[in-house]
Amino acid sequence: MNELNEETRCEIVKSIKAEYDARAAFGLGKYGITLSEHYADIFKRLQHLKEELMDATLYIEWTMIKMSDQETEKQKLISDIETIQFELSSVCQEVEPCVNVVSKIETTCGNCENPIGNNFKFCPHCGCKIKYE
Image 1: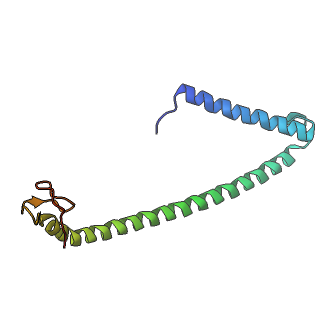
Image 2: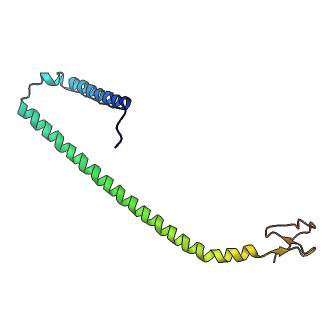
Image 3: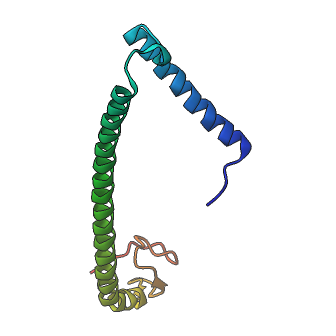
């Protein structure tokens, strides 16, 4: 695993500190006191922490289920792509001989009888209009 460079670590720490500061300001606004001034005893604080951690496990489980669903969908899409690639390969193998035959058919001008390409409307040699059958 790559180590984070010093600048990235500093930015991460700054980000977390900013979140703690915002959370502290929210708590002060909601309760009117800081956490250290809060009257709850240690057991009430531990109970609150336990409930918060239980909520966190629910978020973790939900995230894991979503990630698993996404991985399953990703694997299904990969399988579908591989199936399509295989089928396309089979079709190409069937069509290739026909393409080779058609590309070898040489059209000739009905007027000057010189060979011309398959998509010409006029003979590049004599200028007559080409009639395809």
